[in-house]
Amino acid sequence: MRISHKLGAVAAAALSIVFVAAGPALAGTTGHTRSISGNEYLYGAVYGRAAIAPTTTLPTRLRGLVNTYSNFTLPNGNAPAIIPTPKGTLHAIQVSQGTNSGTVGKNCYAVFDSYFPVKVTGGTGVFWHASGSGRAHLHGSGYVPRYTSGPHKGQCNENGNPTTARGAETALYVQITPLTIVVRGHHH
Image 1 (tube, rainbow, N blue to C red):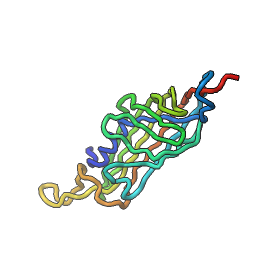
Image 2: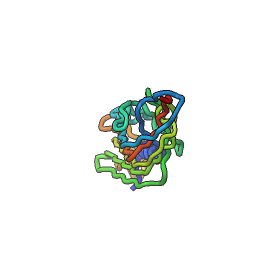
Image 3: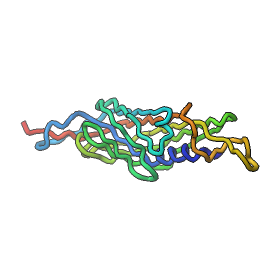
Image 4: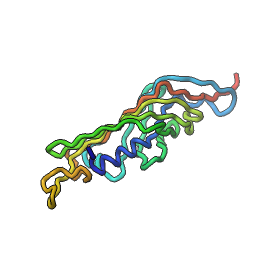
């Protein structure tokens, strides 16, 4: 079954999303390095008008190896995800296609879910030389319009963009297990 263009665009963004997670602040920029690993979880969601905007920015919480936050804009197409945080910028890529599912109810409420593997590709700040892999889940929902004329008049336009903020949602959950970061410190 085909899903609305807007939800499909969100799915395409999801399929190109790259996610990383963080660790403790840098002890310094000279001296020895050591690796630390731990699980990292990222979650962000928007509702209403923000969920159906042409560009979707999610207020995102990162929890686990480090606690921080980001206002993360979903990338378009196959672009890598770049997630700015106060502790550095996270970089990641989608590793493979993943799985998608979607439905459009008789009331024209469309729901789309995409699950896909991601790989951390480094970054800046605490994400310098970060690595790891995990799984992402992107969820989108909203009411699509009905055809107003033609042979499908009155039916849900599964290729249409959601037309109302009512019931609209875009959410992203990522789990990196484990994330490894390199901590740089001073010699003692």
